[in-house]
Image 1: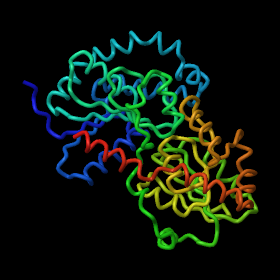
Image 2 (image 1 turned 180 degrees about the vertical axis):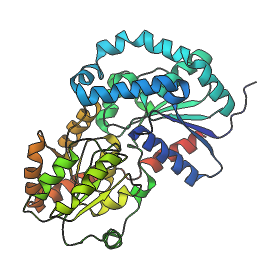
Image 3 (image 1 turned 90 degrees about the vertical axis):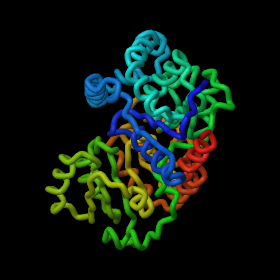
Amino acid sequence: MEKERPKNVLLMYISENSGHYCASLAIEKALKTANPDISTLNINAANYTNPIMEKIINRTYMGIIKRRPEVWEYLYDNPKIVKNTQLLRELIHKFNSKKLMNLLEDFFPKVICCTQAFPCGLVSDYKKTYGFPATLIGVLTDYMPHSYWIYDNVDYYVVPTEDAKVRLIEDGIPEEKIKMFGIPINLNFSIDMDKEIIFKKFNIDWQLPVILLMGGSQGLGPIVELTHALDRLRTEFQLIIVCGRNSKLKRRLEKRKGRLKKKILILEYVDNINELMSIASLIITKPGGLTTAEALSKNLPMLLVNPIPGQEENNTKFLLKAGVAIRAKQEEDIPILVTELLCSKNKLNQMREQAKSLGKPSSTIDLVRFILHLL
């Protein structure tokens, strides 16, 4: 007799410094808001199964991205690499199956929601081997899937765009398994904000344009150099810089702040990006899936810089094609592009309208409704 499953939802991601984690948190928060009686467990799958290996992988990945991005470009979604690593991935899944068994048999989730491909593959192979009865959902946090998402025992995929849906269908995923809810973002982004209150809160002049400068959760990129270059522009605007968890970057900027002419607000990692995006005229950012999905939900035009080869390069292509962003091919181009955009209200308004038609502020709510239906 099959063991009765409680209404438990297991969420899995990798790396706390990632959009996968932010999406997982957003889903968990929305589930608890919708039904406080639901039990959730949010697990870093890589750290849970092999914490030492997780640290090695994270350091290796960051080293490649910073020093040899062309290597990552070759490895990412390369059919030869995918095929040649299939046996290795199966062995890794098998090696981790005992720890996963302990987790699944103890918590016994009815739905498992993975915001990254590694845990999705891990759970899929476990379901295949042991027949575990949970419904497995793979949730994309970028605008195009890659081959490491494709597994037989994934029950549903959540995608942000029609292009992503078409790619999965081409890879053999039945259309009825694909739900186009969007990239899960914090519930705060579905709330209309009073801009006047936000301007007062941050002591910002509502009459001047606001540029939001971000380098992801880790504050990557030439933020200091960009700040000085933007400060030299004659065009009038205010600058908000979000340093993320990069405390060294924040200290460097604070030391230079007194020499800058423009009004500049320097922030660490914040949980009110929705407020900042609500008052911004333009965001300068790396094209991470979560950040750009948040920007779209706030109808915010984007200037994209330094995309990571692979996932962020694909995000860039999608956003440029959609007409919601422009790309600076070189860092030296950024001040010129900022001036052109701020001096062209028609262009900014056009980008805002395109973003409005593309944004999915209710993405997480729609996904949670689906999960509740499955429960």
